[in-house]
Image (spheres, rainbow, N blue to C red):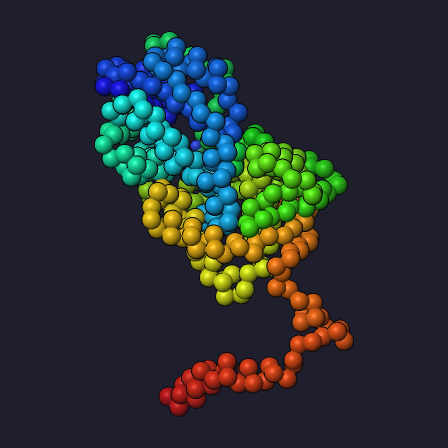
Length: 397
Ligand code: ARG
């Protein structure tokens, strides 16, 4: 039996390699995707092979992640339950599809992941596997294995010479990529507890952030950011830059209780400076260029789109149909938004676009006003007619 496993280099997936080998008498191949989590591939390979993997694959998927997953979600203003920019959720279908490719190339019989039985990620991985390669057996060792605690797992690791970093106390479970960081467990499990500073991995506390605000001009072309402060940047550099500068100003901290797919409510914190800045700026530009009814209706689509990502419905016709709608709405979402980063906040202070629907002559209260005030009477008479009829009827009852 040949199994390809989604490998992170952490304790769980390291133990999984050995466990699969023993339990299934399998040849195990490890795969790690580079999605901006800043791991050293040489070290990962060494670790995977020494733990028992026959082969190690490492793929730089940062560009694919941005082009095919992150930017479509940005165009859709996809924030789960209004807050979470979906960094972890977006990465799962990307990792899964690349894993399937390797499994096919290697003529593997099965794929495996290290997700727990009570999270969302197992669902996202497995829906992708089932959709893309139903012939592959799916193994989720963490759901199956005999260890009842972290200690037992560490015991197993020591017995099998799997390097365990016991010096580093790890009170949190952390998932990291270029679009954001998800942090849970430890004291965060009490939703009343304010997250301690050490829970945050990259952002500076707003208290300690610079006293001087920083301005950034972000230029979008059809919903996609292309320039910062007038300078064209490739998308990887652009996101990295915004992560850095945002983190410095304490921007992008999110503390929320969310509804998981498996019914549980969980408390999680996120750090997503670039995602926060880009979502804020992009949404503001849409307000300037989208016609009112389209803008309102799109917000309903946005919410559904975010849910589909969260639910692991990435490879569904449903999501694809919504993506087509969203792409069409982005035709005129080009222009520049100026944001101000200051003490944990990202505030929009200016916006402009060659496709702007804003007309000063219509909104001004000065003598330059061109709006036909008298026409409003007829408009209100007719627009209000249904309510006039209803009121008359109700008074009769
Ligand atoms: N709750 C987030 C989601 O379902 C993140 C899950 C992974 N979090 C973590 N800390 N490992 O997308």
